Image 1 (tube, rainbow, N blue to C red):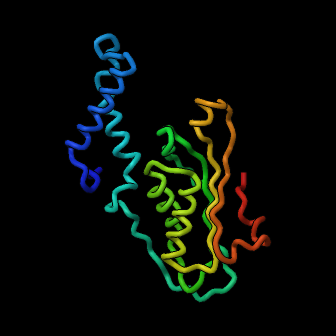
Image 2 (tube, rainbow, N blue to C red):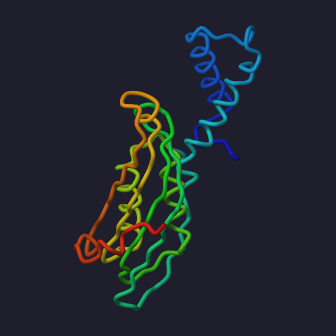
Image 3 (cartoon, rainbow, N blue to C red):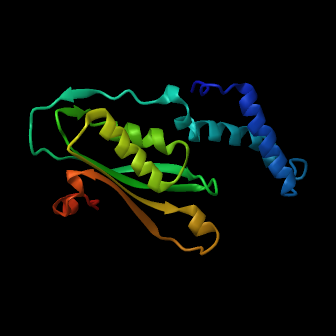
Length: 190
């Protein structure tokens, strides 16, 4: 994987030093726990991959096509995703539904997955993730309506504080898809 823009080996080195400092601050040592010896480098590499959506060079190139239809609803369901919570830097993960009512332009069917991956690969809020995808599609193809529904588990809620598992659903809905008559079509299928 290429280095993110502005990121060099020294950038990874800075993350490695920070992780090594964290390990020491927690009272751990690779001298007593040899498994920790490569942990700073592994964490730096993980973060480089997990936050690749911050690099504009990784912006997805999405194919668009002219469209002459009228009532066509395009829905891509059950796209799996994972991200890191911007508040606690622990994972949240789940599935996405991306739908749009085309105007004069269609986008390739892989666009939903590409946008989901791009925006999820940064420190993120679930609510903002859905809004970013909806806004991107809205700006790119000017659909008559767009909806992004995300359902996710948040390890920050499960590992700390309330320590309960629960699924969080968010919806970013624009244009004609905000009409309640579309709600039944904007559901996940098992």
